[in-house]
Amino acid sequence: MTIRRVVFNQKGGVGKSTIAVNLAAVAAKRGRRVLLIDLDPQGNASHYLQGEDAAAGPTVADLFQQMLNISLFAKEPQDFVRDTRIEGLSLLASHPELSELMVKLEARYKMFKLKEALDALDGRFDEIWIDTPPALNFYTRSALIAADRCLIPFDCDAFSRHALYNLKTSADEIRADHNPALYIEGIVVNQFQPRASLPARMVEELKSEGLPVLASPLSASVKIRESHEAACPMVYFDPRHKLSREFEALYQELAGN
Image 1: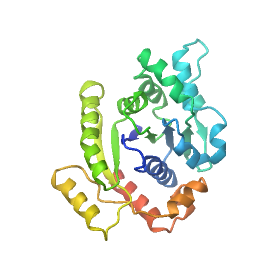
Image 2: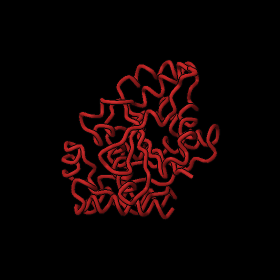
Image 3: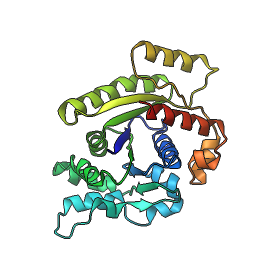
Image 4: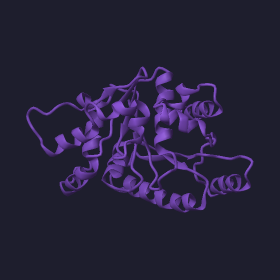
C-alpha cells in the first residue's frame, strides 16, 4: 500500500517545500518509487526539482481543471505525472493557475477529488509526498483528506509555537469529519541551533506537553539556499554535508514509525 504524507503548516517560511523535496529525494535514493505533489501555487517544490523546466509539461492545475470539466475522454491521473532528473522520483508540478481554480473547485465541492486521484495511483508508487500552501485552504484540506500521515515543520520561534496548536486542531477536525486514517506523524524541528538556549528550551517544552516532536532535527545552513538555486535537492547537491545526513536520519526515523 502506498504511504501518503502531507507536509503542512499554515505559517510561511518554515521549510515545507525543502523538507518535502529532500525527504522524497532520500526515499528515491533508497530505491523507493516516489511521487511528489506540489499544491502550492508558488511552486517552490517544483522549481527545486526542475528549475525553469517546472513550467513545461502537465501540471496538477491541469488535473484539477479536468475535475471541473468531466469528459468521456478524461485522462488518468498518471498522465499528469512527469519524471524528474532523479531516478525513481516523479512530480505532479504546481502552476500559478491553481490560485484561480480554487474558487471554482470550492464552489463545486471538489475537496475529495485529490483523494480519488491518489486512489487511482495506488500501487504505482511506494510513497507520495504532498507539499501544501501556507494556508488552510481548499488545497491543504484536500491534501489532509487524501493523506494518511502529516508532518508539521516547526522553526523554533514564538509565532510557530502559537500556530502549532491551531495546526493540530485543524488536523484533528479533518480526521474527525473526513479522514479517520489521518494522524500527525511528527513535528519536524527545522533550522535548529543547538547552542542557542531558546530553541532547545522550546523543543523540550513541546516534548513535555506530549507533542510528537521527532528526534531528528534539521540544522540551519546557507548551503540549502545554494541547493535551491541549483535546483538540486540537498541530499544530491552535497551528500556529505551535515544537513544531508540529517535528512537521511529524519527519513530513517520516519521509516521506522
